[in-house]
Image 1 (cartoon, rainbow, N blue to C red):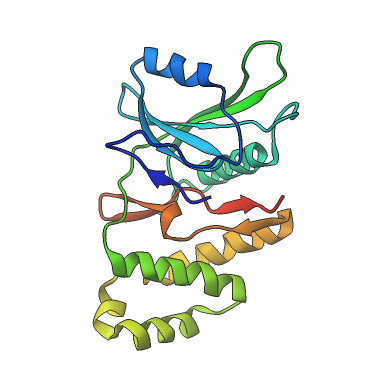
Image 2 (cartoon, rainbow, N blue to C red):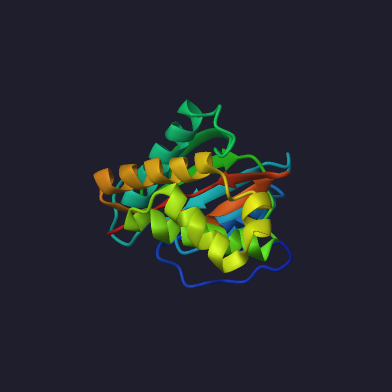
Length: 207
């Protein structure tokens, strides 16, 4: 799901999942600051400078949702492939029930703090990469299209024009297909660690 960054304001967007207001109140009491919100999760800046993601539940859901299981798979995959610079750094994850005894299960996960992408060309390339990988394009065809649309100067210098990144997105698409998920590695789900692109949320549960 695309995440709307809210570093300066605390706005709401239409949610595909539900998060009990008591969780928000508790986090605010612990000095966490709202950092973003999307259809299935809220993002918080922790007092130690890390990022805490809270994945909501769904009405009538008992136990973990498909979104929860999908992101746990991603967190474990990222840890297993931690040597890949395009992977985010997760410290830990846990499921919890709120309120206690309600059966409403949430997922929380801590990760490094990253920055939004500000370069429009990079955003456009990443959006196209997500689309063309799903279509089954190989990197050479994709690079030729980008070169034609943006010119060789952009193609040669842009951070997103890395065959290794394209290969990773292809692998993530194969995993998505095997799990019945959708590829969701567009620009809004990629962030920056200094001058390094990092995929933060590559899939969406088709259900």
